[in-house]
Image 1 (cartoon, rainbow, N blue to C red):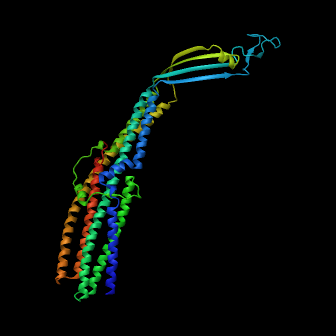
Image 2: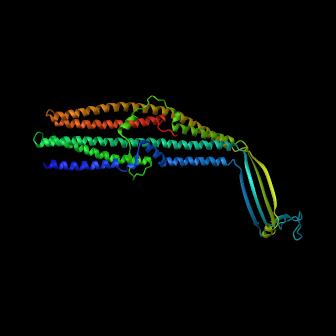
Image 3: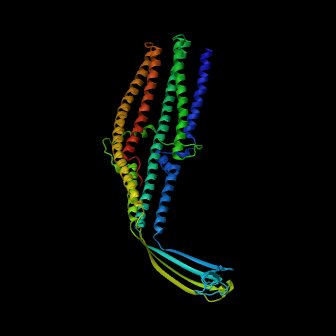
Length: 460
């Protein structure tokens, strides 16, 4: 008798704690309530992976501007004052332009600089303009393709985030539903246990009947504790995928009925490779490598540019004279043409490497097409199997529930055994577990199928 009373006291405390914890999980900070779409939107804005990918895209756009700027006029200016206290000597052949009588005729003599003043000043501005450069025009197109590649990398990161957030959201929602079902099972077994205990005290049933139900009840409490811990872990995973503060509470808006709406999928769809970001990335890489090959070939063409310079200059015997006397202007302009005549076959071998790289990318594209077809077929088969499995598990739950109800009625009427009731309860719980496992597998298969088709996320 004391053992039974102690058991019910312990059971009541555990139940109260579980109810408080469950209530806290479902009600804490209702101002941070998120639907699945809101979780995805939050992740797309706050995920560090996406932020880094967007920063890479910004760098690529800046790189495109850098390449474009090389074709704009380049203008520089310069101001200079120079003083040479000791000018360099001029070295002449004695007797040619100047004769030093103290030195032999024909010897080399060092004389004062006759052509350069000690001090000088120069202020000028120069400009240059690229007229033709094959590599420049190819570079413009390559920079644009590089920017597109960075944008595709960002989109790829978003697809992965949407997939991960969706799966984590469903895991949390289904786990909470399973806790609610466990609470209902615990309440039902609790009622049956109280009735059986009362019947045992009156001598209508044996102690072993009560013990069997106590074991079932304790197992349910243990399983609920496991799922309460799973809720905490799965919410942490969801927060991590979202870029959400793991120390803040989050409440998810959605029921099991909302999840069931996601069961329907358009089967038999054919993959459009262009919908897959990976395929777009490979095409962008091929485009870049083609531009690289064109850039190598453009190296055989001449580079033509124009230049001009204007300025004012003064030379005198000292800095003071330079600054105080009249300065004289000058200007110049011209064209420059550079042409590579022979580079030791450097461009030839670079072109060969680029052609091989293009072939590798084309092989990768072909391999991806085959892989994408396989992924769609596999995910579709998995989705069909999970649909059938969920349908079967739903029927099993209904049957197990009916068996459980009949067993309890038979037991209460004295025509059934306690063992039948315990077995039926265990089968009912197992059927429920299998059902929710099948539901989660189906939803994950739906996500994987959409991902394989390239329809899980489309950037607007």
